[in-house]
Length: 459
Ligand code: SF4
Image 1 (cartoon, protein in one colour):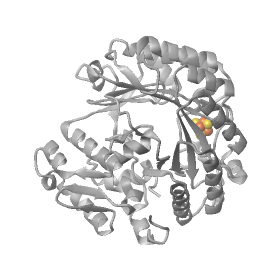
Image 2 (cartoon, protein in one colour):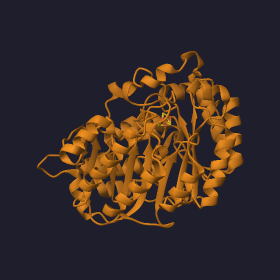
Image 3 (cartoon, protein in one colour):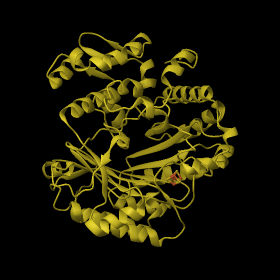
């Protein structure tokens, strides 16, 4: 594995800058206006023929503000707004009733915000309401996951969630150091997280995932290592180690962070390397980008067997034919493209009340987009591209189909991030740190002049 020393400063200066994360291709910032009333073929037309479906539901409410947060959320202590929002969600779901084939929902994800801001009664109403429209399933053959805030999740809610079919829990841990927690306004003790982890296991949640963040104010290599050590005591099945992107000019909440406490770029890199080393030393498998899993976890097995896929929640092993995203700012996709809802709750609610949906932007995929979408996801998930398969899909030799990308890749090949032979384009171990840059070489919609303003840094 690379060390801070072997990732030379020159290498980092060349590649550590802003770059998309490629949870979709094209990336969401490329989406164009799409009002949902278009008479031509719309991307949701393809929902009629899906065999499997994913559902995402965005619950944008939180009780207090974490200063690092870049999510679409509303901070409130009042419950009324959540109750109204729930009604809107179920009305939006109705819009899909005649537009989606009755296909099994193999993935369901509640994200936020804080999904468990909804009380148990309303969580039940939500899932039962969705079950009247979509073919929800139970058991281990589906992945039903929920994001939870360990500061506010009640043990009783775990039982409710489990009874509603959820089998995966994602806990936002971020960092255990008290000074860091103070600096980001998110106080949460190891004991709280440990108790919920035990509770979730006792309830039969098959997979528990922790989110950690490096590069936070007040964090150091030593403090992050201590956080990782505490995390390892609970042995979560999966761990996401995200890079904190400090963009106060874009995200108002981040202006509350004391910039004097921000670690230097070189220190952040050392943090990521140190945490990665500690996790892999403890037996976790590095899946690429920022995800780790215990070797016996289904995601780790899928990575070893070349079956990993990627969606808006990160890595997955169950890519469905389409995703229906419900709620403010939620994104949906089908084989024909993407569509996204209004960002603000007000406009989202207005759209649903008026038209039954609140679609505002999206992207219709053409054949060239589909080709590059496949290739970029191969790079992000399998860390290699079969050049013959790419040529077959392109209908011409690999070198001719991706001539411009290969020019952009040449310096990365010289820097040892990728290697190419007659059969494959392969991401090297060093290249894993710069996966986003390698994928970006194939992105025909990327506007280099906007990278700094739109994307987070690679490292
Ligand atoms: S980090 Fe999570 S809990 Fe905190 S404000 Fe953002 S969405 Fe809410």
